[in-house]
Image (cartoon, rainbow, N blue to C red; front, side, top):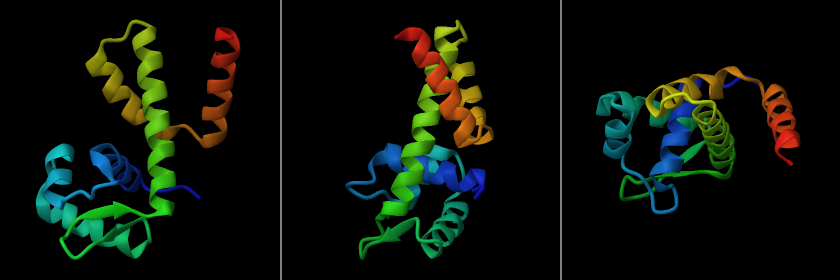
Length: 122
């Protein structure tokens, strides 16, 4: 099933900001450079979809389901960012392009690319 890019971006952001201790909506807004009301709407949808949960202190945590997606998205992002930088792409450009690639490459293609490159390194 194809997920929305924004879903993956929010889950990855919560993962990076430390989903273990909980994340406030304001931290997510600052990190993603979006408004707090935008984050509130997105988090409510993510909670309804079972990707995040909120505690009594208004801290958000990834559910098992959300954590799985966040890890996969983060892994794809780091892989593409490191690959592009190894190819000589400037960090800022590599970060921006990796964010695009992490969403546009299917899991099947990502595994094939990673395995092909790992085979060359080994």
